[in-house]
Length: 356
Image (cartoon, rainbow, N blue to C red; front, side, top):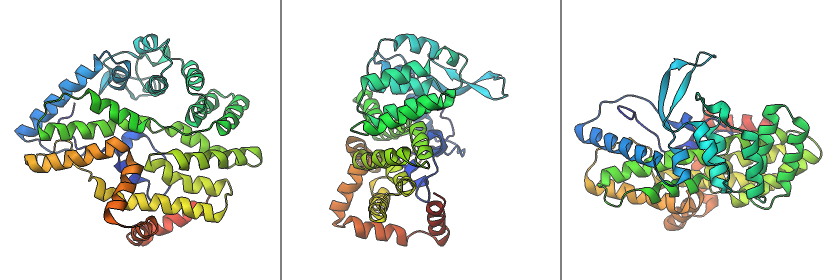
């Protein structure tokens, strides 16, 4: 599955958003440019495939869901002329296994898994899973926004608006990005070569992309354009999101969403400064690279330590740690980041905010 693929690790998804709030699929951060693997790289790829197969048979339901598709496609085409994803565990079987779960992460992962085009995806009940998530995690705005997105997709617009307003009453914002990365790392074998450990840590961050709530964020952005109580609710949600989020994706899109909510310009500027400062820190945290980087042990070990530090605390907190290590304040870091943008990038930022 991994042969001759180059993979950009999950954190670079935030970098892709640095010039605007566009929200895409998590797998859009994957660069599938081909390159021949060395024998050692091929060995790493083979070992990584075996570990993924082991995760799909784990006693931990969360891991089974996460690794329940192989990344390959079925030969048989879908009615829309696309291809089905190949399942290592069917969506139907996973739905039964998760039937009684009250674990918010299980419910979130099941919802996302039900959106993957597979032969058994029709056995899922996304509405049931979304409602159960709000019951299990009542104070999480992400759960309510996800329910609103499912209701909108089904055409129940009145109920979707109610769910959105209920999201504004919730007291916190919690994505599962870091939870997923830490889950994968905890399951890693103890004795790994520096190169294989580095590859596994990159894989953990790539898997963590499943924890970025794209549907919830799209729904939030759409309702932020409305007037009255919907705009007020949007402002409350954005404020909580900025306070609680640990992902640069959410920090980045908070800026145009705050503009849509007609929040005070000084608040919008604060959000922009926060996002820009963390963006500046990203190259000092970790670099995008080949999943099968064939470097020496010392370099691989150093890269692995940097990845582990990121996974331990998350993108935002690690960025703040780097600023402290560099003895630079957020205002200065933000200014340096903006100074490094091209004229086209700067114009794009201005245009995006003007369109809100």
